Amino acid sequence: MKFRTFASPLDKKSMENHSIIRGRLAKLRFAMQAKGISACIIPSSDAHQSEYTAPHWKTRTYFSGFTGSAGTLVVTWQEAFLWTDSRYFLQAEEELKDTSILLQKAGLPEIPSIENWICTNLPGKSVGIDGSVFSIREVKSMQDIFRNKNISLVTDFDPLLQIWTDRPSIPSNQVFLHPEEFSGESAGVKIDKIRKSVAGEGCNSMLLCSLDEIAWTFNLRGSDVQCNPVAIAYALITPQESVIFIQQEKVSAEIREELFKNKIMIADYDRLPVYLSAQKGLTIRIDSGKTNQFIFDAIGRLSENKQLSYILKEGPSPVALLKTLKNETEIAGFRNAMKKDGLVMVRLLMWIEQSLASGRAFTEISVEDKLKELRSEQALYFGESFDAIVGYQEHGAIIHYHASEASNQQIRAEGMLLIDTGGQYFDGTTDITRTIATGEVTDRMKQDFTLVLKGHIGIATARFPKGTRGSQLDILARRFLWNEGLSYLHGTGHGIGHFLNVHEGPQNIRLEENPVCIEPGMVTSNEPGVYRAGMYGIRIENLVLAREEKETEFGSFYCFETLTLCPIDTKLILPEMLTQEEKEWLNSYHQTVYDRLSPHLSENEQTWLKNKTYEI
Image 1 (cartoon, rainbow, N blue to C red):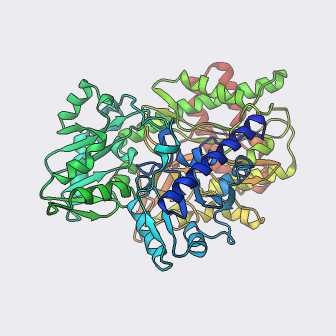
Image 2 (cartoon, rainbow, N blue to C red):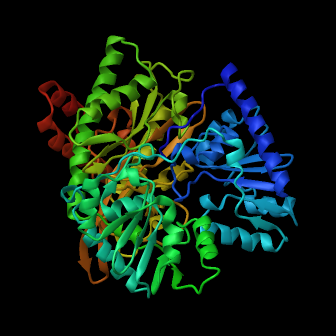
């Protein structure tokens, strides 16, 4: 939930852009009619089912003007609709104005799913998609639903060559190694783990399509996707060798030589189907939720005139779980990264406080710029892990707000400021949210903040038996808000990659059921919040590490260790609302923050931090 995506208010340029959008939709409809397609579905994903994509795959944005990271566009001959979730309702309403595209607020009871809407409105018709940006699983699901309404799904509809003539190329940035001193394991060790895992499922090979899984497996990183240190590639692990399918110019001779030590070869990005069609004796594990339909269809076409010499077996990728169970080196790296980011946050919060006290003017964008400046001073810094969300007052209620030149607010000595930010370091990835008082605040602000804090502490102090799922823990964060008739619509926690994507599965903490259990070694966010539209937003986020706590006659029990190091604003807390146990947690946390950060701070900074971590 971290991509900065909020649009500026409509102006002359916006109106011109919306006219451009209407023109693009007209061209798309012409292409649809030429192919006999009654509707076209355009998702947010790329050929690797990524959450965040390189500009080459921002097709939905091109045709809609909506810049959020999640949403699906449906275009018919007469109408167009954009489905997105609650994080983006306000943003989508603004960005879709005058484009003729209607917003569908996904998740609300009265809003049908895309498939159900198509079944109701287009029975007996044809629906077109670009199969390269839909997974095999998604295509099969749509086909099963559409079959009852005699709707055919055309999976090779890609009119972009005729319409998006200035489409950005696939990035060709150089890849680089993530050394074992940071990763904790060699690529060879990881490949052996993958081979062993799929062997238990009757397979001898594994096809990898997810960019972060490829990056983790081969200890490679890149800069093809903003804020996510990954490179565009596919990979195949066989019993004898591994092959990375990538643009050749992205891999230097030195890296090829290093990869070759673990029998890792390089092939052209678009050669995967041809390579597969020539293999013999392979039983290949594929994750149908992470492999696109185009690859699947291409393999089939190349195999039509010959006996299939290999077997594809569908099942979840073992890499997702291997990757999320951090080893000791990665955990140590996280601790180092959290310390560095804690120093950044202390200095940022001091700068904000001093700016307010001196009357020096500064804005939401000023805070973003200061964050980048402070992080750039830290060792092993690579970049932001997501574009910072800095929302003052009512902007804090827009969950994915991004300050533009038009919306950029000056921070005043009143109300609250929400800062959601994170960094990429070679030794770890960070993600933190703090809501701070910039001056006088109301009793309701304090009450809301304290309710959110109680939920945050509820997760931080959770003890739970082995086999517990995130959906079973989620209530610990929400119960105090629910008691007051309040809630939030986003998840409570998501997994965090190690110098990888800031959003990582397979675990999470949210209302929706997820069969993946929380296990020791997983790093997950803890971020309850509450948002009052047009007024303010509150979120408190730390990263927590799941670890073993004790063994009893009832089995193994786990707990969370909070990794993030940054004070929580005590000016926003109503102490009388906290139990003694909650106060003890907060006081202990603040003592830890001071103990770990103060040796690296100046005397003035130490004094400031001491004043922010006093016992309540």
